[in-house]
Length: 258
Image (cartoon, rainbow, N blue to C red; front, side, top):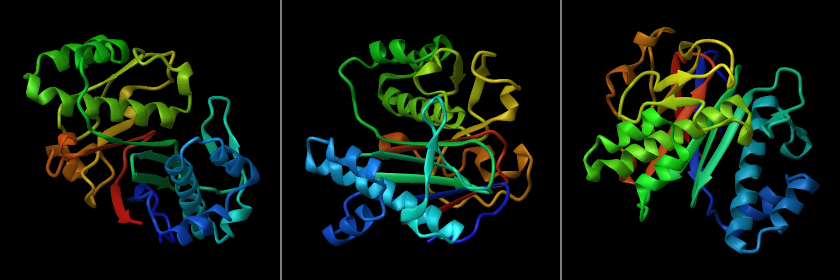
């Protein structure tokens, strides 16, 4: 389990939501009454289990980092719904899951967002893109060969979701008020940021897809990361697309398995 955080580093922990029943019960004991009530609202058992394992795992990670029992941690929510720990010096964190896959992001500072999605085809990908993407994103998608569009769509979708989760505005942020690149690139994929979303230039944010590998960037500037060349980029069509957004440029992105 992650025990310390490095400044300038995004720590990412990836696991699954289908552990043995004993593990699920132990994690459920760490949840707050509100989190248990939320779990009990799910109609299907597998959705209830995923909720318990996701939030229970997050509590264990944060409890270890803060040297606190997972069950005593108290979460608050920003106006847009983004959860945070009401503790002095608490880390920034975010959680995402799709199917049985779980991704937790943690950093010592800043505003962090992560997203994970199981890639899948859609009957009318173009119509979906026109409803959810900005104009320049739709144009980039439609310029690609049809066989490359599913991967590009999920690269764009996870990058946009990670950014929205980092900003913390939830549904109040128009999906057309910012734009990302869809290509399997390295570096910052955020291409446009309207003033209504947030102050500061695009360069003040880092939005990127993830390969699932440790990225030991040697310096704190944009040229110090191996991901600048696109080396090791994970193709979403391989099964799972992942992305991260941070309000600063990471020196390093460190992966761990849960």
